[in-house]
Image (tube, rainbow, N blue to C red):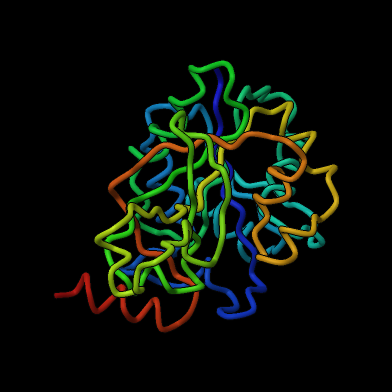
Length: 248
């Protein structure tokens, strides 16, 4: 099975413009993501997908593979699809969409996700992690997931799910098991070609979560549990927190 990793990287981030090129201990963020992903034992290729010449030139300068893509993509998923179309010679069976803002992503997480596709029924896969604090559980910026016994995701939400009826919120962590979504996706190539044709769906629009579009269209998203969570950089404050934490 041939599996490739695609790292979508936009320059025009609303909360942190130019963040793929920010310096983190002497290397750009996109370079750190690329180098970490390249350590995966399961990936045959790693490709950065960008819409900005500055990012393109930078990735080229350190010897990375990069593809210029449209500036009109609404999601990393559709940007991954364009890469597959442009690099048709790669002929991947599976594409892993790797977040471009996690400079210390664990390559073993990528391998964990890739290994899920030994099960032929799996078409889309992602990772979840147990929630350990009430702050995470009730934070709308932390996406929660519930899953069935077979690992199939039943729903994703910014609200805490499942709802613990009859319990005070201060008791929820003791009475239930909750999972947060780790935003790395993998798709079989044929299903990737299909899902980019779906229009935005009501649940997706309500929660602002792309994966709900796939569930609403009847597709199964399977999950695997991880204990690791990297540092995501969404804002300058996130960057400062990472630097302070790792400098100690």
